[in-house]
Image (tube, rainbow, N blue to C red; front, side, top):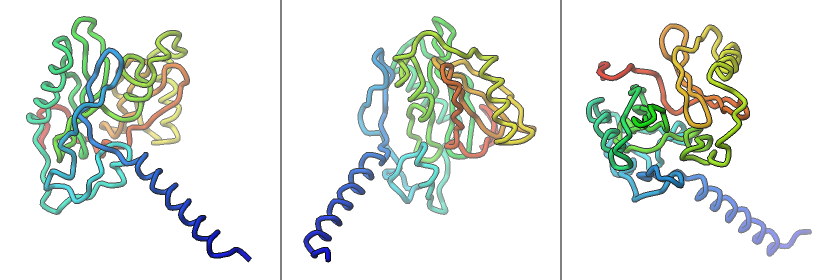
Length: 231
């Protein structure tokens, strides 16, 4: 028979593992910056716990989809304010960056940062629609970006160009959302991002330029429109 001491030790080990996993996965809102060496964590952003619209302290993003709890009276910030936050964010980290391709979704506002010197899109950013926090988009923008993200080790020798990656995305959509078409393409450092939908935009996905892997942007929520759309 297993003695009580062994059982207690086993339970303590399980509790410690769960606690470490929780701390490792718990997203924290940072005002991350774009620097020459990649994403640099800055000071703590406003986050959800400081906004009366939220009833939970988890940040938005990949895990935010599962933690989207709001008070009934929660109201989003308007598009003009979100756009201004993005422009201020861009100015902090380079006079040559401008906000492009602004889009509104139910959970966040989305935009691309464009380098005006090279006319190239370099990163994707979000503004939480309720807290107003500005932060780099999660997913491919952080993991595959060869200029600022974890993909900096793969700066050369892409296996797929914009057209080739689009074919992969179109084939994937035949099963993921039958009838959907690619409506817009964006070339990012190390990957490509595509808007898709059946009649209007219904979502966004990215294709890795090296592996061909596809990452669906599940954190946006339903599409509301471009800049100046009704909020």
